[in-house]
Length: 348
Image (cartoon, rainbow, N blue to C red; front, side):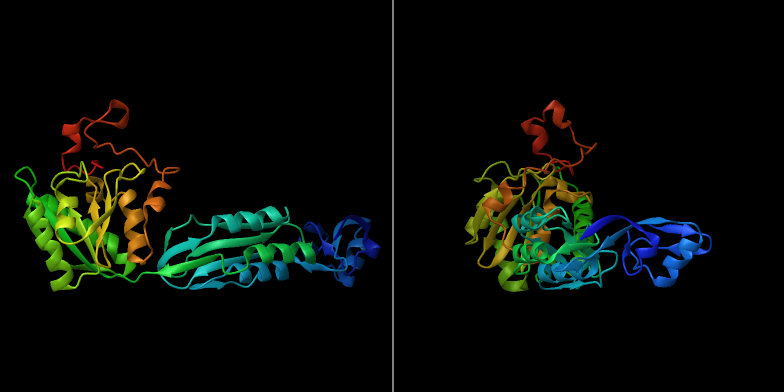
């Protein structure tokens, strides 16, 4: 593509690099200059104009953006018609955005003329939400550049994993220090979290804070009620793999995949399973409606995405979330073990 100043008399058919206004003529940025417009501008006293000229093998900005967006587009996404060198991708269903960061980086590394921006990986999205945008910077790109970008994107680098698990069972353990009103509020907050995913609480039970009671409740939730995901809220935070909730999961025939998470609030989260049903040992902060690490794991599991130990340990960068003012002792002060055992929304 050639770009620069040309005589107005020779500009017909070229692309206007900038918006130009003279007399009653307005030439929009990116518009192809019509013969009448060129003549009118010359008559209005304009002698030169900055314009772009496509050369052999060049692909116009809109066509290039559309081709690259189509190459990036995976299941449950749609591509909007391009405009001004931009093509946006939208979710066709509620779910979790999946993408390959290395491939997005590879596309962006091809040439400065080609850019792709996305929402963060594993972001929950709703139907109709924009998840990514392709923008071609100049008015055209060489076909070879576009081909390399499309090759880097090949194989649907972006997709939305729809929510599949909708029947959630909840087990809450009790201690004398925990009020029933706190459990009631916790259930309301969880129901609000589940609603955007089309999921709901199908059953809830409240049992003593003991591993045997947790084990029996898990078995009933999965085998009896048919829950396809179970959340356990402990009256006291999980302090060790041998604590009540992990011990209860194992006693029910399940397994603990990982305890702890480099996300704060959310450090004391547990992920496990009984058979093919995921089990989350919720951190205390999950009682609060504010975003915390629990949300990140919950939505992945609702979308039936695997959550492995390596997935969890990779969450540290960006895992320091907003300070919770109700925390018994702020992070800077260093909470004690006694503080960590309280079922406060800031716990975890």
